[in-house]
Image (cartoon, rainbow, N blue to C red; front, top):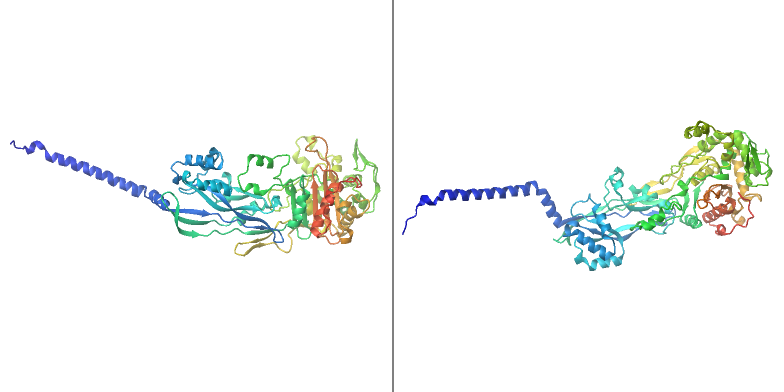
Length: 621
């Protein structure tokens, strides 16, 4: 038997090779363990924990909104949202395609919605569908085996109890957008959160929102809940009580159905807004779910402009309503006396131009009282000449607050415009255009020309005339109450006076007497604003018919109908202003609208005059 040569086997070399390979493998294993535990340790701990624990954020119910009498206007209802936990789905794209097939949606739209939610953490649900029906929930539940990672959650969503009632006041909510998420104003918000986009919902967002809660649940390997770790309850938002009266608001809204225009009712002593209606309106409930392109197009149609609050954002020539304030200025400046009579033959010749009165046959000789009662244009053309445009500007802008925001705090306001020589010098380019010509003052004196105002400005200025000369800051919020019952904010019993009308009381009395004559005198243009005599509530006011180009007819001039009224005449409590776009004459169209709003406010069973056809018996203005 041959002997083995140990040297030829080279056992020592093989041992060293084996040891080297073993140490190398050990080194690689240690290096891998170091990488997994030190470098990626936090990642895997988070993944492991999220495979077991999931934090679910609980949206807080928004605060409720009430009218001044405690009637509920806006509340919350349960709704169903569909979310996707991407990490729980082996093939998210396939899952979304299956979901789209089940619910009848476009899978591409759902995929885009998912891809936009980039700031959410791992294992955090991403919103795909909101406010789905119970029938859709049933279809999803029956197909759960095809939808790994899909969650149906119950969340509170907004319900506007009376549909479009006061829609321009309460506003609406929508899902937060990318621009808002980048803003410091919305710090702490997440994609999928609802925020106020309009009206009180937007301006009081920080109060209405509340604080979200959180819940940690224990899940199994496929994401199904098997237990609960901790729970932090959500805090409901603050409840808001508005100054509006649902009954009066409902009347105003109905009066504007199918019309373009605005109605505002203002407490003459406090500045509280009793009703604020803009037509056409919209139903805020349409924003709580996915809004269709057709609905959005209808809302943003430039002709109807449903999302514009015409009370604040409608800049209109005030027409003869403006004569109230020009008359006060003329008496205060002494350019006319109450008893001075001027002759109206139907037109005033000024230079080469004839400025016509609305009554082509003329009013004859009229004094201040008769000129307001019959709304004589020629009288106010003459008064305007004597005052000059800059004195008209001083009284209208500096004293009665026209041409500037009322600072209501309900979104953007249009300031309107009161022209002056300085205004023309500033905003016109050519030297020949900068000069103010005397003939330009005449239309300004009757609320035409370059003059534009908002209905709220007219209401506030009229309130200052009838309440003793206090220019008040309008207010829409009466009270804020936290979910635990704490009163956060309460409107003061004393109104906020932002200016004093520096006009002698006897002058204001003369103007008020004339406004009562507009409604009660047999020659007055505002008969239809009168309340039943047996109720003993006297009404004062002023008609207005502003000439403008119709939206439908282009160059054809189609009048805006105005009426600004107050009652009771002896102790004013409420001011109501109405404008109906391209609707006709103020006395025939707007005065009956103000009558119906006042009848609703005073509880007079006489609502419905505004629906009566014009019999042609009233004066035109």
